[in-house]
Length: 120
Image 1 (cartoon, rainbow, N blue to C red):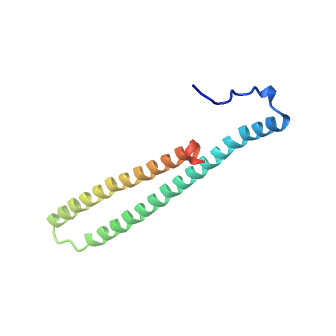
Image 2 (image 1 turned 30 degrees about the vertical axis):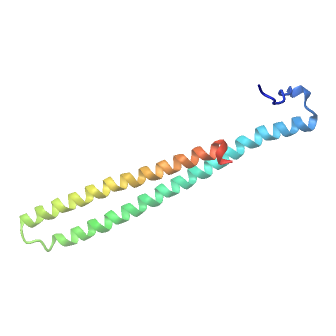
Image 3 (image 1 turned 45 degrees about the horizontal axis):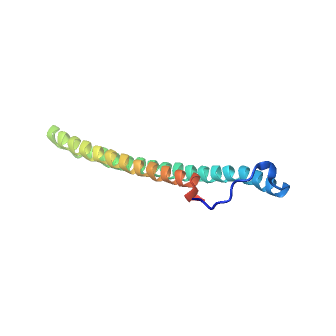
């Protein structure tokens, strides 16, 4: 058995209560939208920074590999270097995918909490 007051009709509200209700109905979605956009912006920035960091790291490592090519003595050295480069690059891209998925997950959680009742 509930002891809560029954809801009053909109028409039974005073002009001040109606104005407050309208203000709440407008402000609440705007605040949620603002929080959501802030969370999206933060996520995009984190993604961008991670991609820039990773790209720079790969370019630096590729430049080092390219510089080393001139020091190789045989085709076997080249094959060995190519195999090592492929292994290192593959691992780096797999790790980067994991980092980016973490950014996406954190951004999604942040967006969700920004529009949920807990985010207020």
